[in-house]
Length: 86
Image 1 (cartoon, helix red, strand yellow):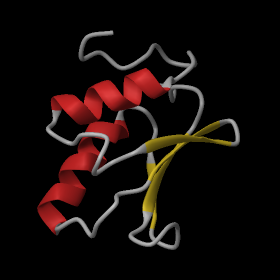
Image 2 (cartoon, one colour; image 1 turned 180 degrees about the vertical axis):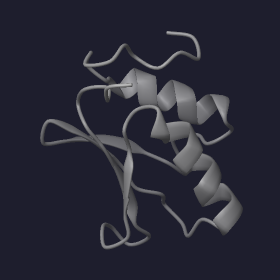
Image 3 (cartoon, one colour; image 1 turned 60 degrees about the vertical axis):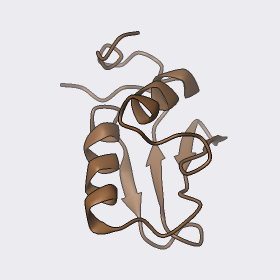
């Protein structure tokens, strides 16, 4: 898996997401990943400051994540089940 995103159009897994978050210093306790529909959601367990939120945005961007302010108590990232086209 390494630090490479999955190939365009290939499945994204919980392992891809967790590996990237842990490599950036965000463990399961702060950024749990759960399956949702055909993809995944990452809902922080506490309010993230701007710096942390932007950092997690950058980490998950290669997986096609989108921030949803109205999701969960502190917002959430929605990640599709397939890697985006590059």
